Length: 331
Image (cartoon, rainbow, N blue to C red; front, side):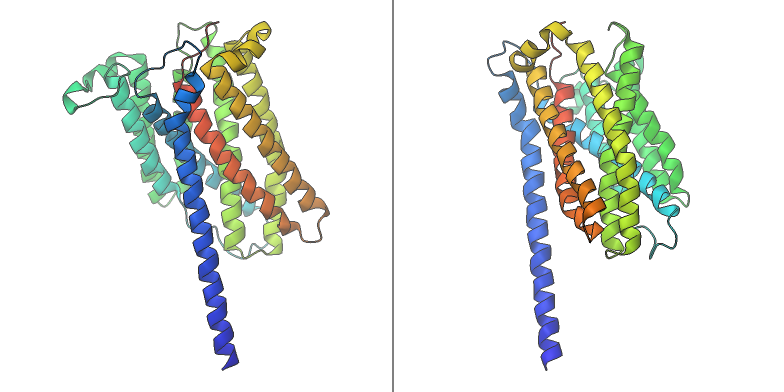
């Protein structure tokens, strides 16, 4: 009788824990969704700047696009790290790439509709000039992103999902080119910086997410600690790449002698400052996880700060989406 009672108690505890995790995840998603919806008005307050109509919706779509990019890139990255481990206890967890590609496709399609109406939010299908997308640079890049996510989804469902990295690379290139139009000073330099920044960020955030999913799938074995250690070593380089390219991009947007003023007086600067604070917090969490991984008797205890790190990275992705939709500071 006692084993049955213990099994029932264990089942109730497991269901309670799952409910707590689901509730916490739902709360974080709702909080993250509020950032692009309420963030523009807070960032623009008393700056004298005016944002484009529908900036909240555009921010949300861009955040969804960036998140959809991180998931499959991170899966491919971590699966490659895990392939070199001696005798992993199981294969990788179930892939989220098809779902991420579908979300990215819908987000890219929504952004393409905005471009097709002259960077305005369409209120009817008649306002969307699909043919006009082929005649502009922004329209061509928006269509490229739509097609790339569609191809990435088909590749994720195929027997060779690794080829999905090629269309995802096209999305990163398109985003880098879109962020730096030809009228900008040295657009090629800016595009290269953005490309490296996006690639490093996607590997960092997506890689950590898939690493934690793999650890859970492997039920906390020694191979899981080895995988976490491998990821941590590469993540340090990715953090350096994100930081270096981010600083260089910010200095291109805001001259050094005006940075301190624009960080508080412009919407772009305020949002950038919020992103910097979040990234600094993420870096501290990553350092905490690395110290636990090295010094703790149980290396897998590093999962606790790593879970907090992935949550903070999710907010970084959302704030990045908001940052791309706000007006650039006057140089």
